[in-house]
Image 1 (tube, rainbow, N blue to C red):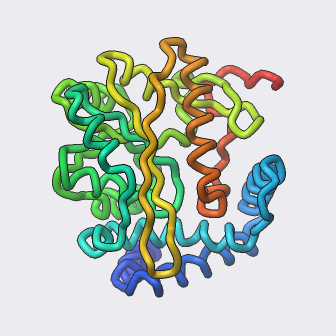
Image 2 (cartoon, rainbow, N blue to C red; image 1 turned 45 degrees about the horizontal axis):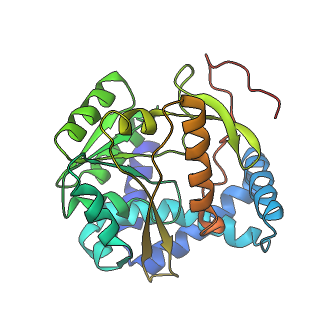
Length: 286
């Protein structure tokens, strides 16, 4: 019964106007921060460390509210893809077209920032996209996510050998693949490199896939423009990543840092980016 009520609540939020859904999301963000000590212990230190190091304004409560909007934006985009596409302003699209027209496919990187779920839908208007995702451990939540993310010209594959093979095949057909580069990979699948000055277990998979056939790598962001106003989608083509896994992962994290700093209040600071996954070697002292 609890799962059914949660699913109904999520669907209800997704049916509301975007502005109202984002306001509700901001309330959820506040409640999560106030009610969960664990949430606070992850959120504030990570956010505060970055804005302090880069001498940015400390807007903790804006960031807390935006963390809830990250969730509500995703729900709303899943339920209202056509409306969402009308609310996205796309910059540098010529860069994306130029990259895909080279004929080697496209590696699309989308950190958890703002309305990141709109990005593959924009690309799917123009060419097929195969997206790598990590299934939830909760079956009911996985059902909600899979149903919501389903969209024409988008194919989701799990983070396993099958998924990697499907992405390799998509690139060989000259199509796009999508990876969330700020997720902690499973033990044995990453390397320890700095992320905002601390060791973070990082996947070298984007470099490994791109370097097979000189595939362009593009970092995308979807910054929230304001309550109910949609998102600004921007693209930055990265320089070719190194063949060395550690060097490539370092280059990747620098690119993610630059993307996060576009709108630091809209990043997923509640996620433990620095956790030690089971099976991974111990992190170095940096």
